[in-house]
Length: 160
Image: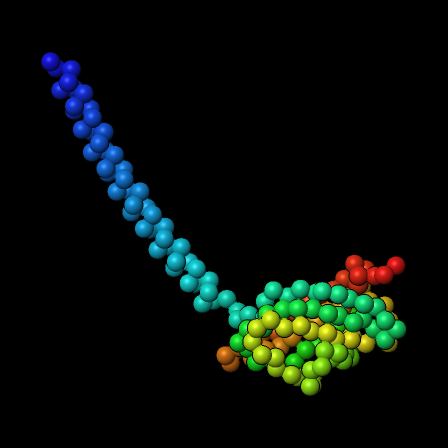
């Protein structure tokens, strides 16, 4: 008769231990969720505003005048200030003139929020460059954000 009593004690102790273990898991999950939320909030608060996202260079075409660059992106809620284009040779950036080919009314045109397309001609005046770099400046809620919009390695887009 003692055997069922022993099994009952073992079962009861394991069930009680299991309940404690379950409580530990729940507290661990709660702690993990709270810690992750605090960490994500800190990253979000400390990160630099992003004037655009999902930039995709759709096409690059070399012409006698320079490079025609076609890109798509999603503009966020920042005010556009300017766009600059640089040709890069052996790591040294050289300022290049550019023209908007997408019907933009001016070079400092602030596009609306949402999906956008950019078509520009980077005028190289016959020069060859290792890369073309498009940089922008935006005012994001009073913070000036300078960012590389796209860096195009010209060799990857050559027609040869």
